[in-house]
Length: 277
Image (cartoon, rainbow, N blue to C red; front, side, top):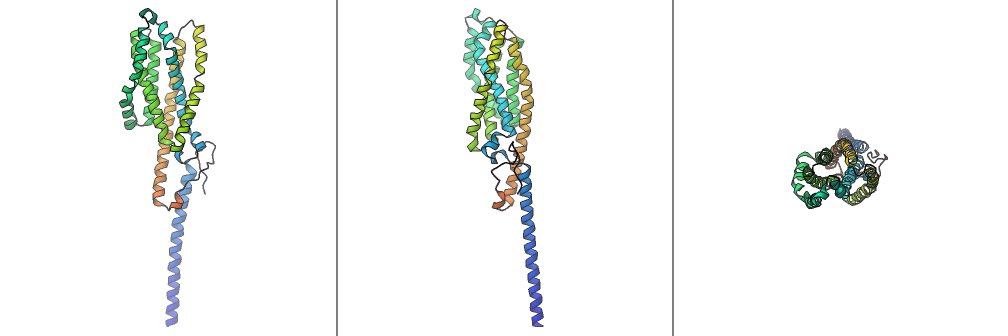
């Protein structure tokens, strides 16, 4: 009897141990599967390699929007003298050109407004603010030849410059890693600088139009409208990235440290997808 009881006890202990091991294996498999699913679906931009971050949809769209508005910004600054001259500023001793120059530093006044726009409405609406200000300034330039009305345009342009640089670079830092942000800024400036050569073609156009700025300024107004959609797409991309970060954080908080690491290399060309393991 004693021998039979010992055998039964050994069998029960073995069964209990096997059940515990099976449960642990199932939990580990579930965690690994969940981790693999998250990795296969989307990798947060800041977790990617430098190349993957620069090839992400959010960065490419943001670089496109920044480059266009930089072209507009450079165009306004470099043609202000001739534009105001075409409206009759020479008759006033370049008074309005002086006002334009003095109002440029007023962009600092817009800082509290862009801060509210970002923190209350998000980066997508902050970028829409850039579009709105750029569009408003362009409309003022093409809609009126009154120099006094252009003063309002000077103010809007000052706000536009503040929103452009502060919102764009704050947005960039929100989804890129610390080691990639500096290089991303460099890529954006190089791209915008190269794109600014397109202004040379507009200069030749003005010469053919005998100094009339209406059509070149209208071109900028028309081309600003697609930027509204681009800002919308950036917002969608940022929302997706934020959700992925939250899912990853929740997974890392629950799972073992070994299951919380992400692969450095990306499987897709745009760097959006990481291979499942």
